[in-house]
Image 1 (cartoon, rainbow, N blue to C red):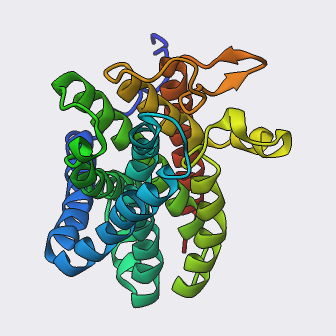
Image 2 (cartoon, rainbow, N blue to C red):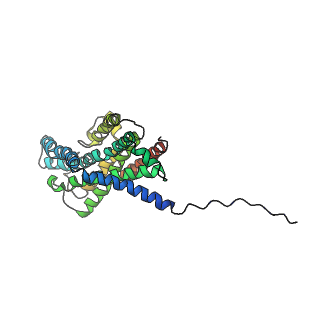
Image 3 (spheres, rainbow, N blue to C red):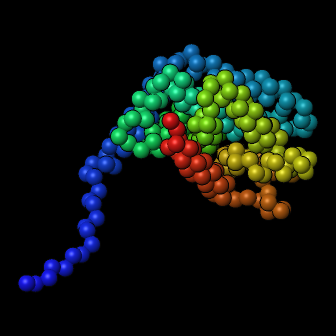
Length: 286
């Protein structure tokens, strides 16, 4: 009689079509966000009203406070990248509100029983929200010529890519709050308290170099600061700013200017970390 050697059991083969199923689920969630966006034309127009008023009414009024030739138009150019972020804020946050609303209505429970990873559903929602937010910011971007920014294809491509990244950053912030919130009213309260300081402490209205030390210290740990600064650097590469102007001073670490590519990398890293945290919390959602 010969002994039969027993080796380790063969590892289970990966389930065929698993990636395709995850991809379809993510695309369906993304498409749902886009359908809601396209059907809500009134909400789209209202959410665009605030950044346009901020730029072309408040911005023009504030620009008159600067003295010197050409400084008025320079301030409008300085303000423009921050207003792009402001335009993307409302639709980005609405994705988090939709998560809370889906939980209240029971639709989220129906989504969670689907045979796909919960993180796939969350990523699909975040990408959908970032797309919607970037589309709204793109409408404001199309008005760049009114502020004195030249229409250059390369610059607009850079700005749009950076706007998508900023939109994703705000979307994932809303998502990570939403997965831990049970009521829509609570969600809006928390996000208002969280995002309002982040937007206004991003160098939107005045350069970081003009801030007091305590405010500048808060600003340099704000991820939106680097999104606004990267977009401002993109504009400045195609705009002749006056020599000696402090308006376009870059964000600095210990006296050294932060390179635009590093700013983009920091925002991307923030998005990755927060998506991972939100996905982990979402996977435990009942």
